View 1 (cartoon, one colour):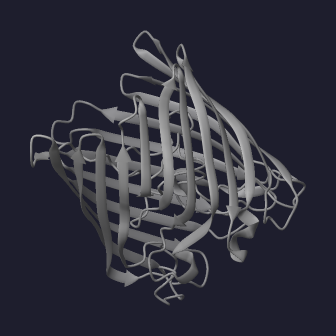
View 2 (cartoon, rainbow, N blue to C red; view 1 turned 45 degrees about the vertical axis):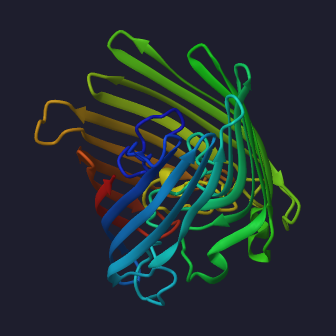
Length: 402
């Protein structure tokens, strides 16, 4: 996860970049259509009174980008249809079923203006997708059918020589819950996302700061200031490749936060690949301040971390420790299934404060791509111990992009 390891599947995990299908309008103006679609079956069973959920949903994004000189204007709509609605989407009132956070929805996903007229600098204004680093702190939640976007201004620049600067301000987080979610459709506030990094030989280093001042009372607990640094890299070793990464951050209350706290975040990962076989081991800690409050990541791509069963979208007040290991393999000799990849991951979860067991989880996926079509099968099996509820999830997904 941290160092581009194998803990998350490459297929369908994040929103794919658009292919270059630019159509000339004049000598100086081009138009690029943006089209992608996803069909998914998600099945959820839990060891409680909730009924087994089956969600068959289809998601389509349609839009286009016009480029004229240093300017690019992009508009994109997003629509999600529930084909089999035997699930609790959080907006359909089917609370007797287990939850799947993919409500039916139609909305404006992105509407942005990009200016590149300054050397080595990109300025983006409007509703946009923001994925920062591994998306641990800020991301688009691309696994969900309804993407998370931000009403923001973002400046990315390499004018300072070897130092990359990334500065963004957002006043609205457009959530995955869609337009029928009432106050959860979007969360307003003042969000400053700051980062500066450089490449030092095979190692990329970065310092970052995230200042989140939530504007709504239901979100005040997520107001925080986070300061940290991360380092990632990879070293070739004969036919093998060693990857590594580490991150530290300190988080405390900020502005409207109702509780005063100080907590630390740690992450470390080491991986190796050779001849298509990969192995990765890692540790992540979202620390707690003596059980009063814990490190939170409310703007993150959450499904990518701490198990695909999604048991920790909000960090418990006692914090979270995640020990994980992944084994993966890329099959290069299967002509009928080009790009076939498989992986399996084991997680062990504990609290940070008092170190109590939070359960464990097995995750597995197999995916392949056939031209513009990607196919993905995933499974998650969470054993709660005494912390929560045993949960099993299965996905079958087809993605198509133009």
